[in-house]
Length: 252
Ligand code: 8X3
Image (tube, rainbow, N blue to C red; front, side):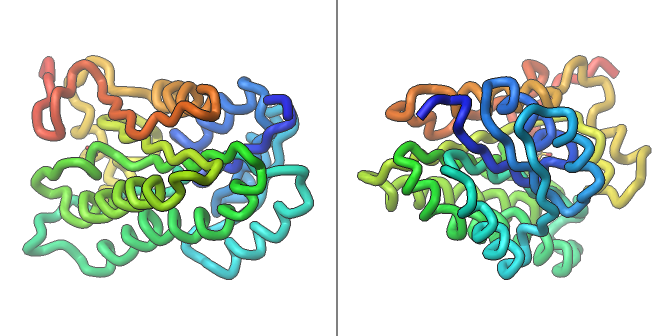
């Protein structure tokens, strides 16, 4: 099968890393299926890309995910799943974090990946050269104060990737984890701080060049476009100004 005929499904494709990844994969010749809750956004992006389609989907809704997977059965193949949908809610310490936030973060960052992966795995396997990508985070590999529920959830996403790779060994499906550090997108920090633009701006204050969504999409597309026998198990990507989750160089 030629690269032109391959199909990639991207979750959370309405903005940020998901939208940039959809663009990067389309540029690499993939037919992209964009999914997200915000239908207008993915429809607008799909209209810009060649051979792209949009499907409104909440990855935390298992029945909706199963219905989506059934729709995909009409395509000749489903070759790539990029589990990008996710995010952070709140930055309170463990002592005062809202359990509802923790639950919501577990739903989207962990169960969302589980639902999509379970639903699409038969098609990915049938493609003969399937790829599952999990966009985790450096928060899936180490903690930081105020990280609490997000760090716990992203550790869960990391564990899904690690476990799945072991369990699929011998099957024609790769499992790639990309763990980005500080990425400045329109929505990540604003969502985390519930629309407080001041707090969101502080996250990136004085950081010369945080990663962009395009920087991460570039690494995701690179990993996916390696030959099918090459599995990039884990790719940690941070801006040069960030040496660890807690060591960031700021000029102000
Ligand atoms: C985002 C990275 O440092 O905000 O996934 O947790 S961090």
